[in-house]
Image (tube, rainbow, N blue to C red; front, top):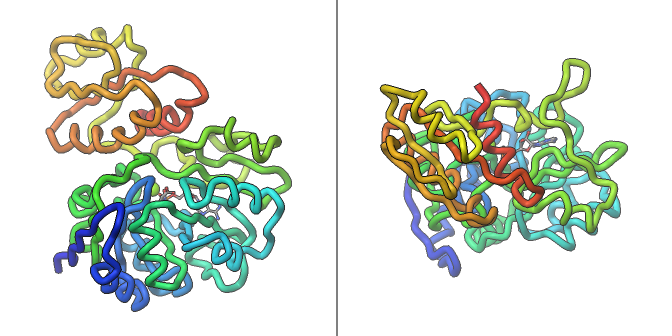
Length: 330
Ligand code: TXA
Ligand code: MG
């Protein structure tokens, strides 16, 4: 069956329009909804059967845990067995917003949510539609990005429909997700705070609150545990192979790709021979906001190769570069 589509104003969603979506969540259904980062595929976080449906719909491996979304920090804290000072301070500074905190979990959190780990990932989203939905549903909502496992994250309801279609019960359309890449994930459950996944909040800004925070390496080795499966080298990838090239090597990349239908994600470069050239904003926030939509567009246009002009290797670009490197990993 096709999902029920509910369209709401992104800034001032009508609670009456959202009520059926909240009721569906309470009944254990799957509801896709916009957050400020990307669209999430939500389910009742405290019901194992509902959570299992997320894994089936996405074909997500059972070892990859989910983020639980709550209306406020108090509701998030209720699911954590420990709430260290760093959690309090990060929550106060950055919630609601594109930050996820990993903490030891209470027994209320089903094993399915945490993929068997003793921790839970928690986030208070800032998007008015997500907040309104959580307010009406009155339950914590587990929600990974609303895409098939390993595919591109959706930043519009249209992306969700194209990727998951009838595997979702309800899709709430609240326009384009403004931040555009997934939240930063900070693990506070271990002996030292670790940035598991960079987002648009830079390491520098997070360190203003937690100075000892350090970035986890991209690759984990065989003898270290894999703390976040989002850290798998290949992830967040379009269908077409993606090559990340310095500006000066784009024209060489085009020349070497005879016979391909080339799509390109460009900053300054202007090169002939590209079937679908897309120009990106030159600052990281604008770029992140547009990135997945651009890659979805190139896939939809039937490109067989995507060339990306590498953004500058500077701290404010870390979240964007992380996603591009993973997308380009063969
Ligand atoms: O912005 C976002 O975070 C979006 C929106 C919908 O909130 N969600 C999202 O979910 O990106 P997902 O499932 O695509 O990514 C969740 C990330 C994964 O890298 C996962 O491994 C990590 O969070 N994660 C979840 N629970 C964890 C845990 N207990 N310990 C370590 N990492 C965890
Ligand atoms: Mg995802």
